[in-house]
Length: 141
Image 1 (cartoon, rainbow, N blue to C red):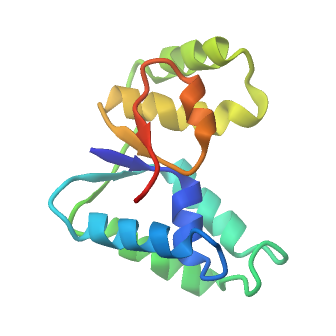
Image 2: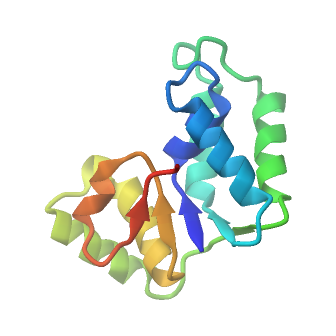
């Protein structure tokens, strides 16, 4: 199973991004493929927040547009929403302590904990995920 980071989702919807083509192709192929694609509400909400924010995209998405995009991802044949399990807080703490910080890594650690709980590989452009022991991650290709 692959768990998609918000950065991949954002690049997929931002046609001005230098990583747009790679992210969109990987996401479209994965969501229509046979392997399970995990989505986390934290990542989906980050897309809603950032894709509609003036100044981040050349043309921010409208609320209707971004909700339509998210709905499309959620209803894709191979997509599932991953939820934290009973060990989530403990895993999150272990990951944050091993990274030596919380702060800006908190959302990444949350996604990493979800991936560990569900035996998933995180798909991301963010090399910070390398800081979490035991986590498997990959760049979309």
